[in-house]
Image (cartoon, rainbow, N blue to C red; front, side, top):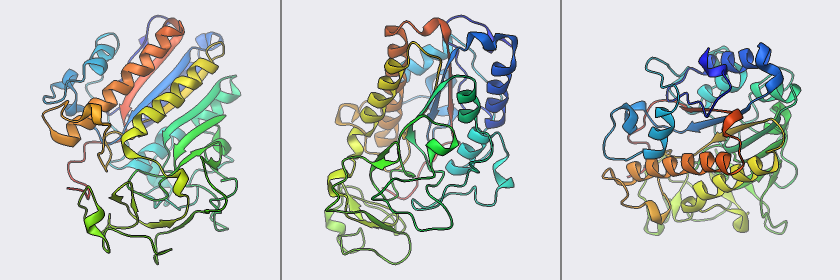
Amino acid sequence: MAIFMKSSLRFLPFKLSTTLAALLFTGLCCSALAAEKPNIVFIYADDIGYGDFSCYGGTGADTAYTDKLAASGLRFLSGYCSAATCTPSRYSFLTGQYAFRNKNAKILPGNAPLIIDTQKPTIASFLRGQGYATALVGKWHLGLGSASELLDWNAEIKAGPREVGFDYSFHIAATGDRVPSVYIENGYIVDLDPKDPVAVSYGKQVGDEPTGISHPHLLKLQADEQHSGTIVNKVSRIGTMTGGHAARFTDESMADTFVEKAVGFIEREKDNPFFLYFATHDNHVPRVPHPRFIGSSSLGSRGDAIMEFDWGVKQIVASLKENELTENTIVILSSDNGPILFDGYW
């Protein structure tokens, strides 16, 4: 397959079958080319459909950098995701297993336990066994901790990405619209003040912080009832949390933060073979892109978030070029599932 040829950046775009992705990675490492150990960067869009991009005929959002990547590689016209929602499609991608063989592979709350069996291989653990440095940067949404005990957010958070093959991880627990609204790096909440511990609940409300129901006048985005839990950054979320105020993320800077961490990993591992799973949050709700992208499309916040995603693609490719890695790097770009037009926020 041309995808295994050593040349410039390769591109596998949207709606790529997660099973196909697993086969590609397995075939890569088991082929005669395995000794070359090309770097692998998997860029995973969130809730973006193939028709949202210019290279597939989309209008209203100029995805020039994604289009340029597509023009230089392979563009799939008949590839499909294994599921129509976040958690099961990501489960399939990492494990190579049809998600619905696992009854827990469904849309998870932010405090769900890890649903990947740590005793079974994943793409990350397989590649790590082949000598690759492995990293997850971005959205996780596959559960954290054990089903047998209550997760303590204020201590080391395990099991998680590191227990299924990732040497480095910087991520949010689930989605931007679900608490806890914090970053987690290598198993610990970033910037957590031990005097302000985090508690999370998806049942009875925890704490007495304002919610979208009790204080709708504090919101910059109006939301439906499901998305009217604890207010963080003037956006109400699914579920409630208390504490961790110094650690709470700001939606507008999330894309920049993820890019910074991904580029940092590339620069650290440029002399070694690496696998980067760059799971962006764009354009999942709440769509609150950085101010520099506001009005960049003609499609409102949804199109602006797609433009922000495209900018992230540019930064990753630029880092590969700056570090002279383009001749030995495979770039695969896909979306976790098809487009979401309305999902809780106006």
